[in-house]
Image 1 (tube, rainbow, N blue to C red):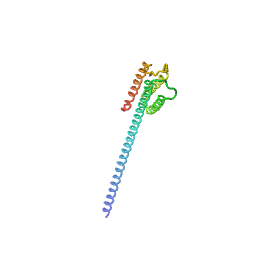
Image 2 (image 1 turned 135 degrees about the horizontal axis):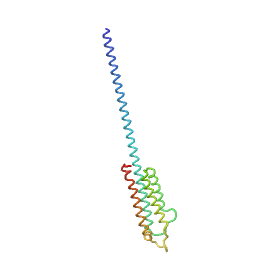
Image 3 (image 1 turned 135 degrees about the vertical axis):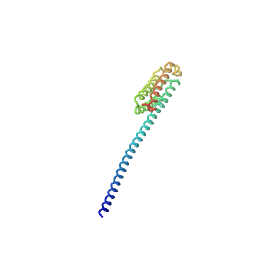
Image 4 (image 1 turned 90 degrees about the vertical axis):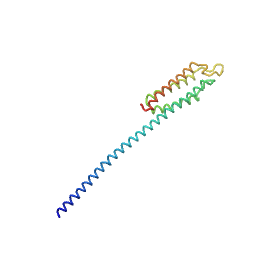
Length: 180
């Protein structure tokens, strides 16, 4: 009878040991799987943050270029239309304020090279606006457009616009392509 008890005891101990070993292996495997899932979730969140940042940057850059276009249209209107230089708050000034707001978003989104290029564009638009407002009033109440009375300055301003806008676009491209 003692042999039977010994065999039963050995069998039950080996069954318990096997169950314990299986439980341990299962726990370790589950732990590893959870750690892997946690890493994957972290990577996914990082990718989502990067995608969102890229979208915000693109929106800021497009908004800045759009505000530049609006400011350029106001400046063009002043160059082309005749009449006296406006005083006080006018459409050109409103366009400059909108450009300032768009510039602030570019400053927030960065990087530094893009912000510097945007600052250059903003400065050129402000300089052109100040130039227009500082030009001599229409002589004899005539309606000659500024571009006819100050052709060299008009052409220089147009050239400066293109140069600075192109510099901004060249600074933005590598950022949007993921090279920064």
